[in-house]
Amino acid sequence: MEMNDKKVIMQGDKLAKVFGHGSGKVTAVEEVSFKFFEGEIASVIGESGSGKTTLAKILLGLLRPSSGNFSFRGKEVDMSSFKKRKAYWQDVQAIFQDPFSSFNQFYKVEKVLRDCLSLKGVKASRDENLGKMKEACRFVNMDFDELYNKYPFELSGGQMQRLMIARIFLLNPAFLIADEPTTMIDACSRSTVMDMLLKLKNDNNMAILFITHDIGLAYYISDTIYIMQHGRIIESGKAESIITGPRHPDTKKLLDDVPKLHESWGL
Image (tube, rainbow, N blue to C red; front, side):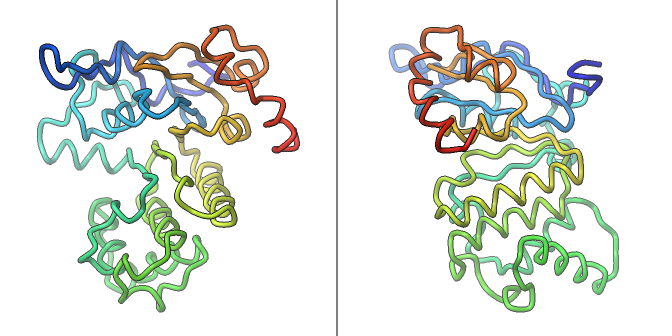
């Protein structure tokens, strides 16, 4: 065991993703290695185009790596069949920055939530499932009876983001990838969403990987930080040590505003 006796839940070894061929070839992720632990909050920080979202899609199984491998709970991830993908997604889920593109706009809220129960393999009566969906909506401060018959496009951005968290509440994954989950919502909704995610983490010992460009947020919530640039991890370590004592020159440039961050976060 590592990290104060916590088990490694997700591990990557020299992951790479190359798009295109020949002169048009672009390396989005280059030999990235990492260890994420149960119950840990880790953040991958990088500017736009650094490769962090591509890495997130690889870990979610939406992109196949060009080389390297990654494992979940000690077993190499295999997405070669629908059955294996479904089993993986029962334990590994994601929240993306754009809630409007995260839902099928032709599915009503009730179907969105029922599909979560189906993916999880929950065998229960209609009333029991209804109770679970109502509980999930209460967790995110929404009323199921007011929402169940609506389509996602009828909800506000903040409501849709909370609906995504209601999905996570129902699925209860062991590992959650949160890719810029608060970028497209207002400050009040942003705080609410973060509080909900942290409560899920604390209640269920969920590991969360935040993909973000927000250094202040990462510093505030993370156990571990990875700095990503041009597809590579250039520095990683405990959040405090990365922010207060960066070693890589490019990390130092990225953290030029750290004093302001300390003031704005009250640290």
